[in-house]
Amino acid sequence: MQKEQSSIQKKIYRLVEQITNEKFDDEISFLTNLVKRVVDTPDFEIIGGRIWRKNTDDNTYSIVFQYGNVKKIPDNYTLSVEDQPVLKELWQKGTMLRRETDQVLKDSGIFIYSVTGVGEIIKTPYGRFYEYVLGFNAEQILQSFYETLSIISTVASARLKDYRLTRYQEKIQRDIHKAADIQRRLLPDHFVSFSDFEIYGICLPDSEVGGDYFDYFESLENEEDRLGILVADAASKGLSAAIQVLFVSGAVKMALKFSPKISAMFYNLNNLIYETFPLERFVTMFYCELTNASNRLVLYANAGHVEPIHYRDENQSFRFLGSTGGILGIVPNQKYNVENIRLKQGDILVITTDGITEAQNEANEFFGHERLLDIIKDNKDLSAKEIALLIMEGVQIFSNNSSYNDDKTVIVIKRKPKQ
Image (cartoon, rainbow, N blue to C red):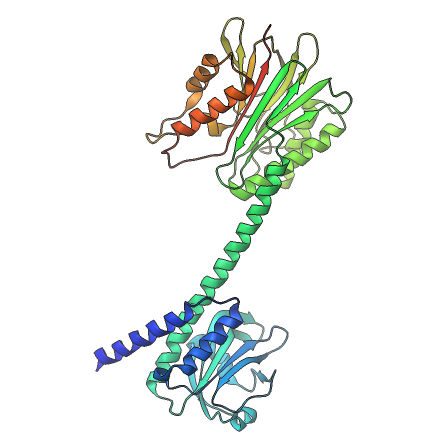
């Protein structure tokens, strides 16, 4: 007997699962189709079904759909929770059998019925209630009918939860698409030239949006006077990192309109990040200004960023541009020094984020600085664009089979050699 009952329950479960897996556009259409299919399925022996929805502004349920061989209830009819105690108890029991007490429903031919809760349980000042209540009636209220309704409630609630999660994920994905589009539009053209410098930058986010950002800033006073180059890397990941670097982008653009000192810009930006992002504050940043001075002086500040590499062509040596201050956002009122180098003819300055040097292969080895230096030295006679693309290609090949990935940014600045 128990084996037969279990077999019937499994059959009912499979049938309900099949019904609930059908496609639907919204929650009401899902529940409407469910009620229709349950009533129309002879195995369930149900003659009528209704959908009631909890009203948010008062302590009532309103009918939103009815179906079957039962006299129609007036449209928009409501049931008071006070008059129907079963609605108060339902959140604890899930499915209940009752004799009808509401005269309007009795006039519709509903005398003995079963109700089952579906969806989330809402907490109100009056108690806890299901979002939706499905009411069904049959010629005979048997134990099998109660079990059927319990299965319907369990499967339907799970399907609604999945539907909402999917819709939420789709919304998040749409928002990420928008954020990625904004981020792409904010990135500058890869190539820019200034005086006898050529500059080429590439940014490859690990996902649709990333925490790397770079930009070029022409002087507002005299376009031939100087060119600012910014690279920033937010320590967090995904959307939160993208928001941080977009914030940095806007703040730097605003600051540069007033032509401040580099040290003052870093100082103020550090405090802004500290105050604005209490949980995920950390941003590294490198900023330099190429000048049109006869000695091609380059001014720079480094807030805990990966050390850019200066290749000196005259003696084929390398110099690393270390930090001139702490990571942005860790502590307030940090001070930043401004240093300088000279880029002579044939010199190269390579700025990256840690997604380049810390890229890993399948053996968990880092790409590191040595491989990067080799690429620069072996290809020093190529253009800034060619060097940047070779660096990115080398890193991508090196880390192709790694389970760890990060945003990757490379900017190559090359002063044209003597002709």
